[in-house]
Image (cartoon, rainbow, N blue to C red):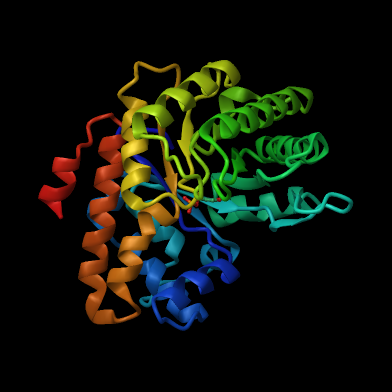
Length: 329
Ligand code: 13P
């Protein structure tokens, strides 16, 4: 999952989220259109074989077949990538804590993991969501989400499934990089304390954190060098060396920012862990735009996906440059 020069494709948008992405490109979201789009991604040989180590799927997709009746999960396996599954059922309002959420999905999880393993999933993902705002996050919301993440991770390991542990501190808002640092530090400390309490083997997880960045609406935006220095300092303070890898979420960063920041992080190496990408939007925005639901645009969409996968693969090695970006474009 964190092999050199490779990263994870997060293609696990829920039906509600993928509808938003399809609305933006004027495509009706149906089981068939979702299948066609994802089949196109998974059949992109250049990207899948060279730069994608693993793919996170949604419940619908793990059960779907390609147009020629090959299960989509087989397409992923044939490319050499590892299939995985999102198992949380979303962030729901946390009663008594306005503006905060708790991620649900623990009830019945052991049975669901058994079924997903039978279907071919070898890792899973659970996303906790922490928002920064006036008076939030609270200690209670951080603690509840950290405990749920740890209980999920313990269930996964009991089912021989590698848990991706994703505590996402949102970029929304006008907070500073320093505030993002402070909140992400509190969150990671709480998460690793709970992973210990729940007897999760750290050697068998992948951490999927946010980068330490300025809020999207902040007047002053940190440079890739500043983001990288803060993120690496934070991880060195919070992430035990036993963790075999870190794979960032993109969280609403532009395609180029997500790549430039990952590259800047890896230029600070050698680091105690491989640090790569587990991007949804930053890998898919370009191919979605190129595709726009038209079968005739398939090759252009695959070229756009290959390009972003290659750029991020280089960034995972600290070998990306803006010049390469432009030359290939
Ligand atoms: P983004 O890269 O679009 O943030 O998605 C990654 C993901 O899997 C969020 O859970």
